[in-house]
Image 1 (tube, rainbow, N blue to C red):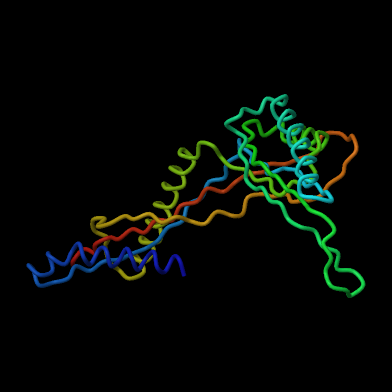
Image 2 (image 1 turned 30 degrees about the horizontal axis):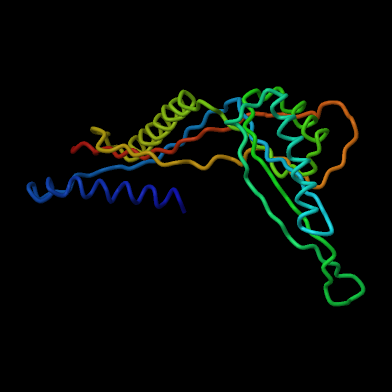
Length: 237
């Protein structure tokens, strides 16, 4: 559906552009419109980790005090691991009552849960496993997401654009040969965003881990993709 809308928008834009010429000459130029797809795989060089602490207490103040202490230890561990302040951002904080729903009785409040999470930007992906281990050992018992990205995608995206243009041109030549027509000048080129596959992600909650070797992690590769639509004029016979 997205590619159909993309192509339709390109044709509408072209018709608007050529309408003056049509009004003057009285003859709409014949066109051929094709889309092309290009993608490049790149190795991620940056990772994002969302980690934090969930604590419980009989009162909200008790749960908050325990959480504050644990988060202070987590911030210290991040700093000791070489993570800069600019790369740590609070992403969630909540205080919620906890209820007991057992024995088919009316819910009874038995305490409070406090959750505090930060998103950490890691600029050395090869240290991710060691960082996860350090987080857990410092008191983190909640890791809600790990994702990877390419920090400087411009070169890869430009290569994808070239491949997408070549793909559209190849298709146009196939159609032109099959219909015994000759391609004229390019009348319009437009770019649409291509959806990227989901980035690798790891989720876990309420962990309690003893000392262990660094967590094995794999960043894999990420696909950077571009779609283009190209419109050619068909030469008059």
